[in-house]
Image 1 (spheres, rainbow, N blue to C red):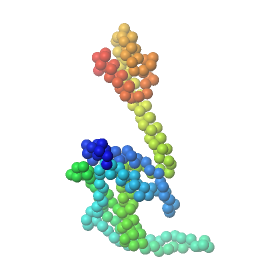
Image 2 (cartoon, rainbow, N blue to C red):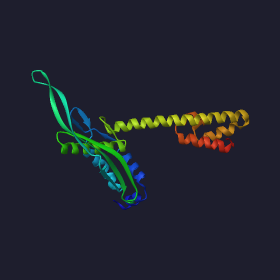
Image 3 (tube, rainbow, N blue to C red):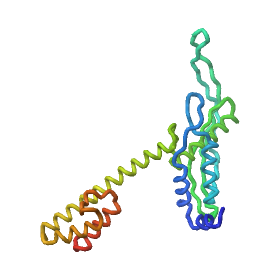
Image 4 (cartoon, rainbow, N blue to C red):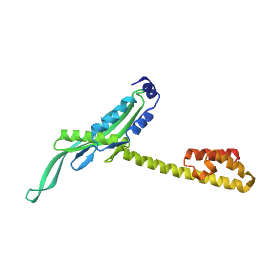
Length: 237
């Protein structure tokens, strides 16, 4: 880790570090198809996350809660069709393995700082070892996907980010609109009581927007500063 990055990492707590990782891995494309499903491979997820775990000096430790592991036979019938089109039922004998698990994040810069996340694993295959391995793989993949709120999309990641930006812009529009409503009411009430101050109000608003048209403001930060300035300048509550 470079000196500047190392110093930055050491100054962050575990929640800040995990938030940084979440921002970097918020969307991943489904890159594998099997059994009629599309999904993101565990190695694809790990490759992207582990590079930032190293950057921000974090460890992730898996664990199985003692006494919770269960291994049991799982028998069921599967309907199948012959080459001639005849339908028959096949007996399937598998092994179901399940356990309560934990995933523990550790801040390597301050090992006393950790987060323990309760989780679970379930695997179903033809023998116990395969079931166990399958359960661990699924548990690992879905823990990382859900913990970091990663969206797995068939679309290009840029498409998802475009949708995020649209949502952010819509939220910004709503927030700005609410502030402008307050600005409008404040100005109208003030001018109703002090009509001689119209010039002063126009001059103040003109510092923030062209032609003093506050309804054309599109940024909530600008609208909020205008509202604060009006209250301060004209001593309004």
